[in-house]
Length: 217
Ligand SMILES: CC(C)(COP(=O)(O)OP(=O)(O)OC[C@H]1O[C@@H](n2cnc3c(N)ncnc32)[C@H](O)[C@@H]1OP(=O)(O)O)[C@@H](O)C(=O)NCCC(=O)NCCS
Image (tube, rainbow, N blue to C red):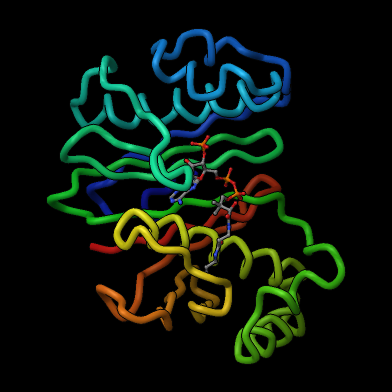
């Protein structure tokens, strides 16, 4: 995760491992306005929210932003970054992460992490376009068992990059992901109108997780 080749050079990424779903220490340290966003939620949600926001504040700190700037939830759940910054958050079993960058260098970013396990039966057909199904088949034949999960992860990263720019939903059939074995991918955006034809992406499988980042520079 600390390998910055997953992100544009201007970005800062911070992650933490936390297997204790009941650990609310980072949640308790959030700004009151941030805690209020999930104050009615179950402890597991508060814990993941607190951990990922902690990562986001650390990333912003590395970029010189004071921790007094709240990162609230905006339209459809998108994170609201301090003026002049963008980024993305993710949380999954045992892992929380955030990436941030100045908007003068990166317009938008999407980060997603998933356990490196194949998708449940039937899900691939719901999320994949025909060319993507062929790609997953080819990757599986080459020994990449979790290729379907990687595709899903890249699609979620694509949505997180897309939404803050367009404020529009993007269905799974509205971006075609071209994954390459060298750890890069391209999200071809099929929705119209679109501000750009594609996002660049990077992926990696590390420590039992699939991680994908999409960005619009
Ligand atoms: C929103 C979504 C991408 C979140 O992914 P997830 O794997 O369920 O959850 P993650 O933990 O990785 O990410 C959650 C974080 O995503 C961010 N997020 C949520 N909605 C967002 C949006 N509209 N735009 C950008 N970021 C968003 C938030 O920071 C959230 O964390 P928080 O609520 O603690 O702040 C997913 O639930 C979803 O709705 N997917 C359908 C849309 C899609 O993927 N389309 C495919 C296009 S090819």
